[in-house]
Length: 117
Length: 109
Image (cartoon, rainbow over all chains, first blue to last red; front, side, top):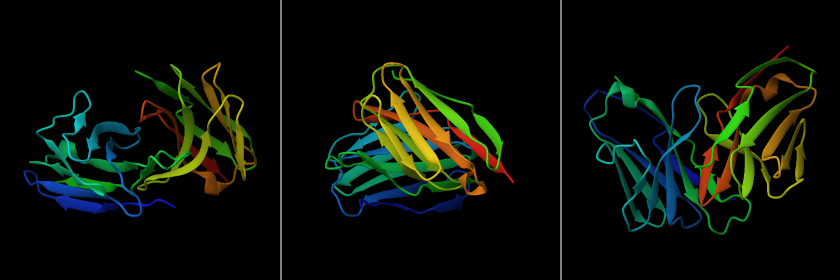
């Protein structure tokens, strides 16, 4: 079945550094990818929709200058958390839109646990 | 914007008991999904419900959909400890998922 790889799975870094998270669709082309954030014991919140070759669409309240999204190829989208601070610590999950997937329109990555000290 | 509500938010149940988790959504949705999430993990797809009256079963879990009532249920039969996890429903429409608040299930021996 379709697989989405997310890397890294876990990262700890100091406040003020930037962190890049990669999301790859391994066996299908994903023109659209989604980035979610999940705080402890809460639901997934959509941050942005990433479209290959164009600018990402951000949800209300998400700072586009803080969370840089690049979708340069049909199989890779990246999320960069710039100048990360402790409040950015969260679980970040990407998903890739599979237009061939009749019952499963999106495939989720394994998530990235981000901890900012 | 489509809103999805689940209840209960927290559920503690004894092994062997039955219980139902409810998922209400505010406007028409193309499909309804149920996911399981274990601590520190991503989402595991359980069921996809495509039409009114759809019922899917896998092991001790059974999901149903009533599009007229905008309601989906996840029924747990004879719970076992392995079912302890957080369960999310999600409505899919307009190329986007709208997730419910989640139900944290703990099955007690």
